[in-house]
Each structure stands twice: as C-alpha cells, then as structure tokens.
Length: 402
Image 1 (spheres, rainbow, N blue to C red):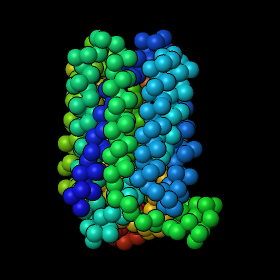
Image 2: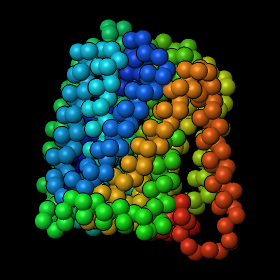
Image 3: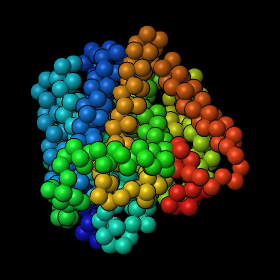
C-alpha cells in the first residue's frame, strides 16, 4: 500500500507541476487573442474532454487503467510541444484538443483506480481522506510550479513550456508505476456498447447516483472552470506577470489545505454545503465589484471552499458505485461536468468580450449565489423527516449524511 500511495502522490504532483499553467491564459492574451477567442479555445478543450470522457471510462473498466493514464500524459506533452512550436491561435487550439484528450482520459479512470485499490485492501472507507490528500498534492504541484514560474516568467513563455514538457513525461512514468490491477470487466464478458449501456443505465436508474453526478457537475462547472480565468482576473486587476504566478500559487495553497482537510466535513448536513455554495457566489460577486488586488483573497476563499464541496461529494459518489462499472459511471459524471464547463466557457468568453471581464465575473458570481439560494429554498420546502435520498445529492446515502 505504501508503494501505491507513493505512486498516487507522485502522479498527482507531476500532473500539476506545469510551469506554464499559472500564465497560459495571460500568454494567450499577450499573443493577441481576444476574450471570445480565449473562451472558444477553452471550450474546444472542454468539448474534446467530454467527447473522450465516457469511452475512456469504458476502456478503463475493460483494459489497463495505468496505461490509459500514461497515454493521457503523452497526449498533453504533444499539445504543449505544439504550443512551443506554434504560439498562435490555431496552435493553441490544436494543443487544447490534445490537452482535452488528456483530461477526458484521466478523471474517471484515476478515481476508479484509487477506489478499487483501496477496496481490494479493505480500506475503501478511507477514500475521501486519500482523495483529499491526493488533491492537496496536486495543488502543491501547482503551488511549486507557480513559484518556480514567477522568477523566470520574464525570460519568456518558451522556457516555461519546456519545463512543462518534462513534468508531463514524469507524470507518465509515475502512472506506469501503479500496480497491475486486474481489469474490472473481462474483455469478453460484455462488448463495448453493452458495457456503456450498463453504466448509463445504472446511473439513470439510481436517484442517489444521478443526483450526486448532477450536483458534482454543477459544482465543478461553476467553480472549477473559472480556474482558467483567474490569471486574467489578476492581470486585469493590476498584478504583474510574476505577481500573477504567485497569486495562482497562493490559490493552489488554499486549495491544497482545503483538499487535505475536506474529509473532516464529510458528515456535515447537505444544507451546509448549499449555504456554502451561495456564499461562494457572493464572494465572487464582491471580488468582481472591487476588481483590484485587494480582491484576490476572496478568490482564494472561493476556490478553497468549492474544493471542499467537490471532494466530499466525490467520496459520496464513489461509495455508491459498483466496481464493475465504476470508471464508466465516474466518466458519465465527467461528461456532464464538461457539458457544464463548455456552456460556461461559451457564455463567459463572449460576455467578457462584449461587456468586459469584470462584468463576466460579476454575472457568474450572481449565478452561483442564485443557484445556492435556490438549493437552500428547495431543501427547506422538502417534507420534514423524509428519509428518501435527495434526487440532487443522494443525501442520506452510504456515508450516513442526513
């Protein structure tokens, strides 16, 4: 188990130790891309990810999960190499297609691999804690990349991309160090489409699973997708390139702490998370209204609290899934997430181009706050004492949350 945990942490660290990450959106702007083009490029990334997500889950249930994770890293390596060779709109677009393949191949596959390894050792109850620590390691990787990028940012984006290529190669090596776990489904038991139909049917027929999938998707679409715009927020609010990298590092530090401690919140009532959702929207709206360096700490709090919500509900989802279709259903969740993320990108980019980034951030904050308030009102309207699982979150599920 120690070797496995070491592989998990090494994989998550190098997966995130991408020096171009804190500055790539600024790189796009410096290359002359408009807000609409930035949004379109990010949407292509997201569309590619959700087109790959569900088939990737089926492959992960039927073939080598560690092999798929390694291939994913090599796809992103190729995408960053294209950015280095052709730093213009079409080059960035092609690179994002390959990065989208990496994203689609990784999410559900990694989650399923970790949960089933823990289950095989009789330690599946520790998933939320381990997932939180793995996420924390990932954000430590972003933090380290950000602080390494800050002093060399003035030397140009090419050097940052070169170091990022090395990190992708290291992550691929870490992926291949995972144990040779048996496939969840023997290749001859079900054909590809039959296995896919089984996973989709199990998702749609379980109100608890479907509710968890939807809630996590909304959380990640409205919270996680904005990560790609934080550097633009900081730059437009008045921070230098070096300061932007440090800001992204500080944000990653907050998310790392939130991830490591998230398991302590796993038994809180669902209503608490709805309230946190609404508060997050208010934080973003206030930060956008200020739109100056003093607003940066509000964004750190926004990202950290959304990370707690994500990890807690991801743990509830994994506990509700059968092993045979775990990666497939986790990838269905990823598919729904990417649909939401794509919608956000296609809305945020044009709005920012028409009315400015400040207005786009303000509108997004208002939407997040309204959804949180709506969820709180819906929960209050439910009949008191009902023991049925919530159709949105699976409340009352395997971890005993009520």
